[in-house]
Length: 131
Image (cartoon, rainbow, N blue to C red; front, side, top):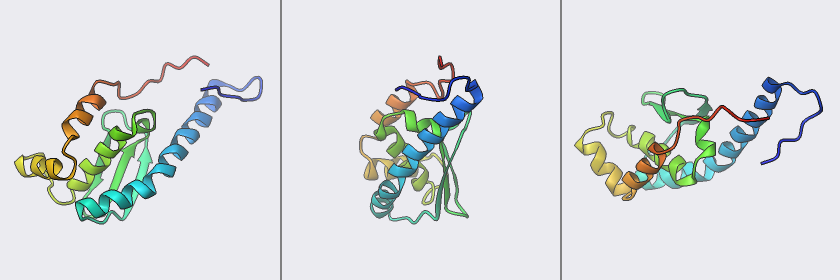
């Protein structure tokens, strides 16, 4: 990827440009992906938001039916984004990571463990970019 900015642009400004680009990439993918998985899982998500997270790939506010996704997912394979989205949607049915949760994941995304392992082999974030 080549980042083109004006000469003299500082590191923070460059990072902001990249962050906006990654955020757009996720926003472009999410509407269609959400519709697909809402239908499969049988839930309705009222809102999906994106934010930088240091320790989580995603989170879910069950009462608000709001899913937060880590901005870093834009840098991962689409299968990883789908895994986190489905994982959080399943929390709208089952709050805990118990046997019922795992069975629901098996039903909706049979290869979820493969995608989870793929995601967990990658760093949560890579911030040591050379500009």
